[in-house]
Image (cartoon, rainbow, N blue to C red; front, side):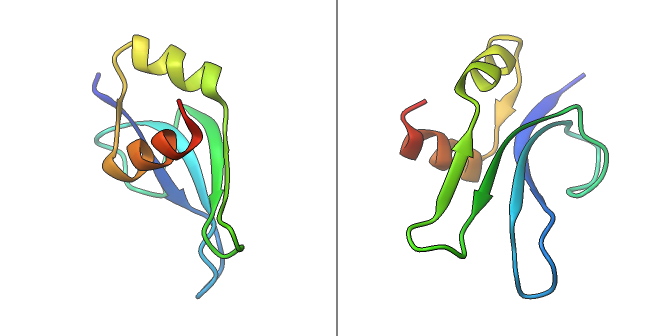
Length: 79
């Protein structure tokens, strides 16, 4: 099973807030996920990035591939 660490949108219309989730690569963007590993709110100044580094490192060691946007967030947090 190919797992990805990616963003899932949960905000209302014109108010995007994202969860950072671990999901099967075949599931839809806002569909089923395995675990929530963080949050991202681009609306605040500065943007709110809340990632659980231990969970992310654990999933990456198991073979989960972060998406480009999550990789950028991880780099900003120093993970």
